[in-house]
Structure formats: C-alpha cells, structure tokens
Image 1 (cartoon, rainbow, N blue to C red):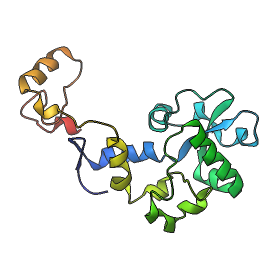
Image 2: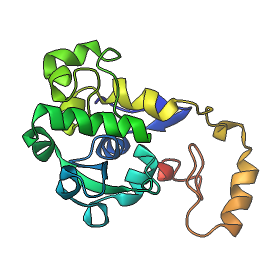
Image 3: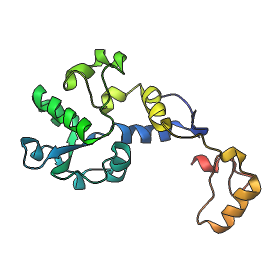
Image 4: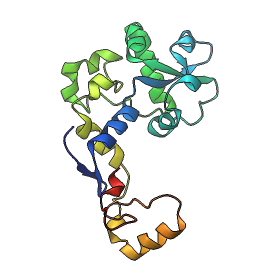
Length: 188
C-alpha cells in the first residue's frame, strides 16, 4: 500500500485500506457448507468468528441457504483439506453465490503465488498473504464495482453546517468539518 489514494471520489488513507484488506481477505473466512456433510465440522461456527457484519457485506452471506451452515475457516484449515475437498468447497461457494472466489484466469499474476493450486485450478480464495502487496490492485476495483462516485464536494458548506446542528457527533465529511480551524477532522 502507498499513501492516500482516491476511491469513488473520496480520499482513502492507508489505515482505511488496511481495514478494507482485513474485511476482503480476513484471517478467518466464511464458507457455506452442507449441513451433515464432512465439511460441516470444518473451522468454527460463524457466530464465534470475527467481523460477522463485515462478512455479510463483503461476502454477501446474509442468511445461509436452506441445508447450509456458515463456518469460519482459516487458510491453514483450508489448505489442510485434500485438494479435492478444497475444490468442492470453492465450487460450492460459487454455486451458492458467496463473493470473492475469483477466477485464476482473471488474476494471472497470482499463479506464481499458488492461486491455481489452492482449489480446483479455476477458482481461488483471497487469503491475507495472497492480497499482501496487491491491495490497491484488488480492493479499489472491488469497492468501486457498480458504485457511483461520491458527490460530497458538490454539497455547499452551508448544508454541512446545517447537518452538524441536527446530527449527533461531529460532521466529518471530506473537506468539511464542524470547525473550519480543523479541516482534517474527517480523516481521523
């Protein structure tokens, strides 16, 4: 990661990029598995895993489909499965609509880092070590996909001041803050 960059018209600093990376490629990831299958005991139940809210939004796992449960799995647990088991697990994720199981073909630079060997040779999982050093390349397009640029800069300062009178807490929008003396308050 480098210094601040612009994403959807909003300045994003390294600290926020690091948080995004943790949501995009967490140490423990959610996997949907068939109830009663051999994989049903893999990892831990999602209720005890970290960042369940981020999991729902990032991986689009809101409610497991009927007959499926959600398990939190580490890279070590994933890689300890036989390759056929990893392949079946990744194919199941695609079939049930879990996000972030990209194609190896879409990321040719990752082949040298084992993406093709992770599962079935066609799909892989973004683990933290695979994302490391590729945050801008992977995260920015993911965040921007299907989204419109922010129009914060088009809102007059008077509107932000008025919002500050009725909203709880500091009004911290890009380029605007409750006090003109501290224009960087929104970055904290």
